[in-house]
Image 1 (cartoon, helix red, strand yellow):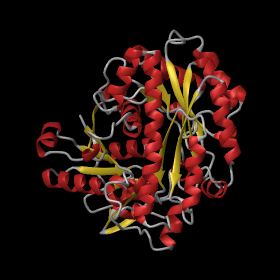
Image 2 (cartoon, one colour; image 1 turned 90 degrees about the horizontal axis):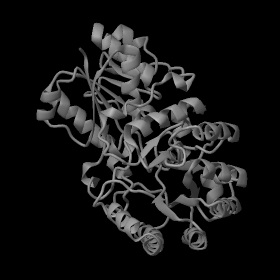
Image 3 (cartoon, one colour; image 1 turned 90 degrees about the vertical axis):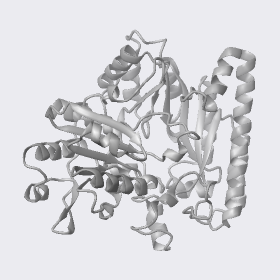
Length: 458
């Protein structure tokens, strides 16, 4: 039987400081797809930043699949190098980074999967099972990059899977969940918008949705197997199609978990209205996350390609609040030409908003985005660089971090601290209110927030 090991690459130095709240679903979908359509049932999934010789010898994989984002690609390269030193095994790498920059395939990586990976991985696994990595067959395999006589060869892009319901539910049994842990799931792939900092639309190609029936069937399976208190719909954009949302709502109301299972989801400010908010509230959604990005009209127009306004951001927050939902947000500072005054404008926007919580980040010029192209033209980035400089935790080594801002690094760092301080104040206020209303629940919240437990309940 063919043994497959999937590795989700993480930064292990951050394990204690930063909670890994939810697993990467990419490898879990691959595992379930390979099982259903190829009979590959001997699969292990690790989430790590290194793999020891002892672990490799105990698992004895025939195929190793590695998945890494840009900021962890240096770690992925080291993992592949270490594996090759221990055993002669085929290594296939996938994920956002290699899809954006296939020329980054190293000599320790045999094949890179570009874009959506299920059908490509199945084809490669069948090939390895029968004849090995045959160069003639690889040339005919769509959606890959591989070494051919010492040179990289990139094949044409593979067609997207349609309908998405063809893909089985992710193989959650391959990772450890404790009873009542919060869970998450995806109900779609892709995003209809093209923000300058996001590579989702480029990676997925076009937006596709799992059917409402599929979504609720997966919820039913998760409920029966794990009995979570909360499930997060972690799509790029969940609340986008009202008709689909109505259908999901009508199906959820027929389930045993209705009224017991609560949800969080993602939305976009320009699509939030009273009807959408009440639909979400009706099925048990209590928290809605939005990428509001900036409180400066000029900067927001740049980041979101003119698709949303600051006024729409404010209105969305108020609409969600008045509907009994908790709005949270992500924001970005450090855009090209963004001034200190414009960053303070965003901070002022937050202070006067009714956001339950928010997180602020410094803009990253990730590959396959408009901002990457801009950074590359300025000589800030290149296709072969230290990918560790993309680590999102800017405060550790601000002198090495890739930035687009024209502000001095120390000034940008000081500005980020102002946002973090405001986020802490908002968290402290929530804890006080929670403590007054629900003392025991507040104690649990504090333990979870500060890492005594490994999950965070919003």
